[in-house]
Length: 112
Length: 122
Image (cartoon, rainbow over all chains, first blue to last red):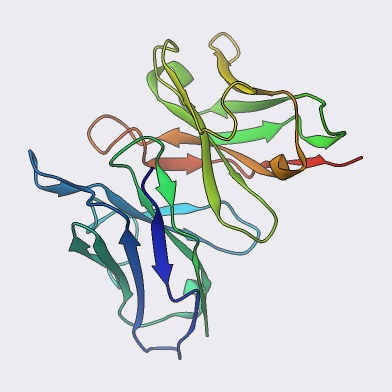
């Protein structure tokens, strides 16, 4: 099974500043035949279910603000929030869907 | 409006059983893969099981294989998770979620319910 490890576990960023969350997979999630990384990011606000933010490592889901961006390939990935807003306070999870069982990172708690 | 509403959670003794349900509205279950994902208190997300759009193929996490069974009732547009031989470590909030489709990927989850809580304790 692929193990996903996020860093840091928690992060405090000032409003308007950049937030960066990292995710590392125990094996590559890059599918060579289509050159796509099977990596997604979810946002979970307190008391709510997760929300899909980004898939294929860098494609924003419809309606997601463009301050959210994803990058990386193979085993190392990053979620960046370019200018933190108060409503971005949440726990962020990466997910690999390269192989079954799909798996999530342990989460990164983002605070102001 | 596309919506998922879970029910059926509760307090159950170790070794007991529960049947979780997830009522879908705004879309047809039989057109999508569906998943169960759980979240133990204060911890992260763990994928539990999925069923394909035909209802003929299922997968389970190793920790629940042989104890949990995913199924659906197309007439009622409802997803189920039968959970047997419950253990303390099964205590969690159980979410149902919709697979995002063939083009994105069926293991992406684009619609989530609010969850139903299962507590296993004597």
